[in-house]
Length: 316
Image 1 (spheres, rainbow, N blue to C red):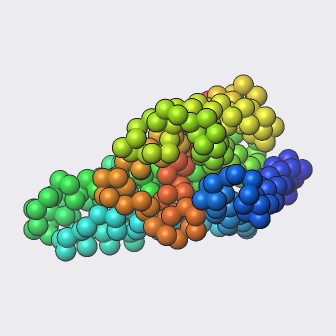
Image 2: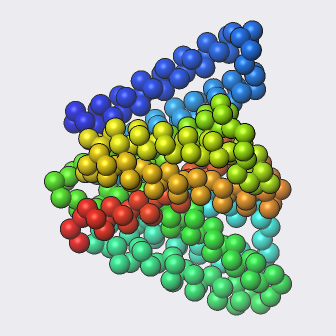
């Protein structure tokens, strides 16, 4: 991990965060410049959350691939807990949830940690075996009330929070030609572009946003923010091609795809929150609600990015 390219990438992110922190504090100390104080406070809370996430992610990278996989496994566990807690469960679901949390979730990450050789297993464990196990186990509990709703909720939570997110650390095991030993940098690139897309869509929306995408789902997401954020993230991704196994145009294409998928993830998970009548999935991350509020875009983008990279850039 400690090569020039990696240090340049991480150093650039830290410099960007330091600059944003300085700007945020200056804006906070100058309330007479005409900016909405709530907007300034929201900006500063987002920067603090970014510091926390970058610090944890960088520490895991430095400790090695095992630590990174474990970190994502813990994030999945907590995100799934938030998702399940959001909707009520019945007594007949509890034993099923035990197997979901303490068998399928850790087993998925164990298989991911064992490397690309286990792709045939970790790619089907949840969408096939867990998908079939969940309704069968709930049925055995003998409670048929809202059966389809209950089983679908558990299946959806496991797919999004565990299965989809696990494809992010799975990037570490891809066998990419002329890129051996550099996969942590690819994971860092992926997370950076997806998260920057979120921030840039928010910024463009606040600056130019007039036309809401779906007001009932998200009152802050505008078409101006959507196109501005995706265009900006695509350009930044193209500029960071040197940190990836891609050519500049390929890095731009990949950034475009994962930015669109990140947007789709944010909208989808917002729709679930609106359906349940809540603002956030939790309160763990200051300024960003719960863990799932922060990783929803990564969950949707990770499997797409993994499979595009695996199909076009690896020897399999």
